[in-house]
Image: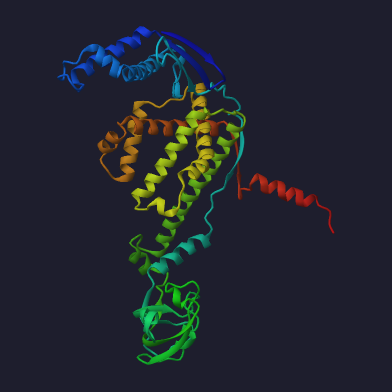
Length: 448
């Protein structure tokens, strides 16, 4: 077998292979021998068909099968060569000669990652958002908690509906056909809601509990019953009760009822700590994103096109499978996998670039992830999700899962290193670069 290896660019290698016909003939002979034992030919018993008959009838198909098998096995052999180590993708082999007779000659392309001489990853400058939790943010969380524990209770000091009340009603459309389908028993409504059909709130204001009243309402467009969309109809309404919102006080009782703390001050402290943690994580994430973008900007990387395509397709399949696991039939959503492929391709390409650059920094600085590091991380994960550590270890014993964990830990350590060598300025607000430019341009405009 003769092999010609010619790099065409920094990521792609052209490979031309020539395989002796004798290797193909052996495959053909083996295939014909197999067929001679199983082929059914009129006038002959199975296993007793003469060789020349078998060759005449099946020789061409046996040759095609043999060519395909030889090409596949030759590709596997070629990819083991030292000068093709690190191959990440290869194209479908294209046969140039030998389909009918003679030596096989075919070509294909091999892709590998480019060699990155990483630079400019130390001495960076970046801004980091100072973590603060204003009192009003804590109070907003407490208000949310109040809303969660607010109950609707009967109004006992009056029996006549007023504007803005919450009421419990039953109603029925008056008439035959679709109108009769408009019916609801014991429904709670907020008369201040803009979602109510026009005329309903005004119609029941002044109505007494247990009173039945006929009111005119105008249905919206569109409406669930298409024949009634936009029409004015009559409904018979009975007010069953008037309700009010019973909002709990911001006190120790609410803290205990929430199950989070014994006192309201302790609850405030917990909310403050939680918000600080979330904002610190967000601040760190934005800082690291800034550092990654700066490093990638000075280390342009060409992503091998076949590899990019395969990874983008893999991401599309992953997203569609996620929808199906959630019980969502993506076909009914009108999603087009090819459109989705074009949308995800830039994201996937950027992700590949970042991983290659971070790995290059890791290699340059001798940053590695050991088995002990993996065990330690498994213990952390087990503690966080409250499962036995052995369960986590078993999960990450699988090659793909382990590789993902190693990559995550490696990238975190590399970014720790890059951040340690950067100048970080704490600021109260992060402004996008585009916003800065816009403000500067506006300031330069003459008045009048």
